[in-house]
Image 1 (cartoon, rainbow, N blue to C red):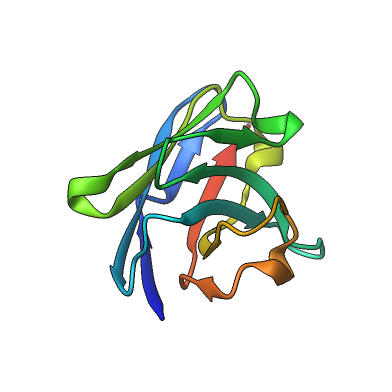
Image 2: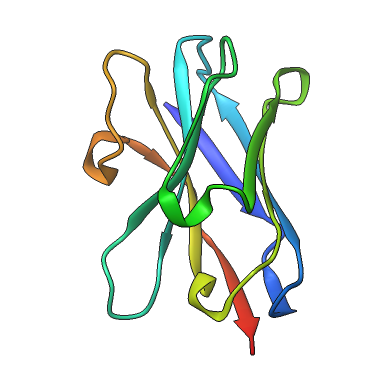
Length: 124
C-alpha cells in the first residue's frame, strides 16, 4: 500500500502560479503511475495529469496542457504539479493518486491509492 501526502495548495490570484507536491511512502514500485486529479464543489473528480515513475512519460488533460507540468523526483519519492497561468476555473481540491502501470487509464476509480487532498483557490 502506498501512502500519499499532498502539500502546496493555497490562495492565488488569476495568472499566478503554485507548485503542488505529493510525497509517497510505503510500497513504491518502479512500475507505478502517479496522477493528479481535482474536484471542484458540485463536480466529479477529474483527471489533471499523470507520470510514470519509470521513464517519466507524462499525460495531461486538455485544460492542463500548456499551463501545468507534472514531474517527479525518484530519489525523494515525490511528484510535483507546477501550475502556471492559473484561472478561477482551476479552483478545486487537488488530489495525488497512484496505481500500478498495467494498462492505460485516467479514471479515478482505477487509482487505488489517494492522498487527503490540498485546496487550491484562484481569485479573479
